[in-house]
Image (cartoon, rainbow, N blue to C red; front, side, top):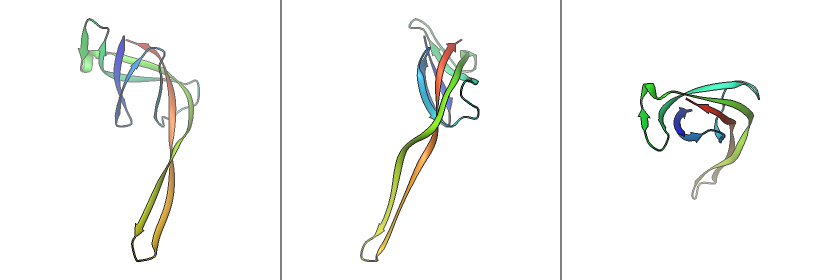
Amino acid sequence: MFAVIKTGGKQYRVAKGDLVTVEKLAGNAGDKVTFDALMTGDGKAVKVGAGAGKVSGELVETAKGEKVTVFKKRRRNTYRRKRGHRQLETTVKITAIG
């Protein structure tokens, strides 16, 4: 059985037992979280829309993601700017679909 959930402006295809890295969610490790399923399927039937169900998960950890480097340069003007950014990410373990 699988489901499609939406969080942080992105959609993820998940199944029971999956570890999913999403944008930061409020809470500490071990907290429970629920998502609305946009779609669920079991290989035979597919449910789409509001009646698709709920997806439960457990927060595993919150950490920083990989560094993104932003470099700006204007040629022949001695203009250079280098900045970096690390987005906060939360790892969620999917515990139940339905």
